[in-house]
Structures are given as C-alpha cells and as structure tokens.
Image (tube, rainbow, N blue to C red; front, side, top):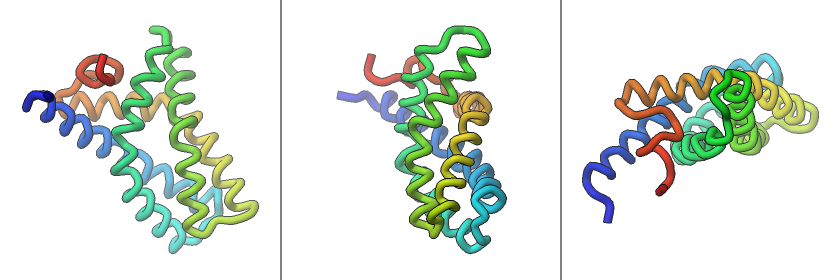
Length: 153
C-alpha cells in the first residue's frame, strides 16, 4: 500500500512534469503551427487549447517514458542528446499529428506540420529534457531516471 509520502511525491511529480510540458510545448507549438504548418491564428488557438487539455494526462506518462529511455544514455553529451530526442519524437509526434489534424490541418499542411514537429522535437529533445529536469528540481524532485521518479524498481 502506498505511503502518504509516496503519494505526495507522485502528486508533485505529476504537477512538475505537467507544468514543464505545458510551458515548453505551448510556446514551441505556436511557432510550428503558425509559421511551419501555415495554420490560421484561430486554428493555432484551437490546437493549443486541445494540446493543453491533452498535455495534462500525457505529461507524467511522457516523463516516465523519458526516464526509462534515458537509462540507455551514457554520461556523454551526444548520448544524452540522442536519447532525449528519441524519447520525445517517439512519444510526442503521433500525439501532435492527431492534435493538428483534429484542429483542421490536412493534406500537405498536416504532413508539413508533422514533419516540422518531428524536426523541432529532434532539435528540442535535449533542451526539453534539461528544462524538465530543471522544473523537477524547482519542485524538489531528482532528475529523471533516479528514484523516486522511476517506475516501481
């Protein structure tokens, strides 16, 4: 049975991961949707509202996914960049494609937006990972992959 302290850590981790995801990807999503996918400001607003709602239930699972994937990374910078990018692209691109499709992107706009998001997430994987770890630190949590952030080991 989970102890009250464990529940508090899980709640704090949920809040930290959700805060990081919403702040970071609302900003980058606006840039991609408006200037890469060519969506109208109304479509961007719609996508960001859907995105914010979807980020709440996926932020913590993504944080756990990233922690798990980052266990493959070695201590070197290149390895961390590579594995952070793999984690972000593999988890977030399919979700992002669905968001912009539901918000009105279609055809070449959908393809361009998805490719743009893939490129952005490849480039932003490590910056987001570092941002996530920084937000976790602000909340008094260890960086990803370290207990108590990891799954049930």
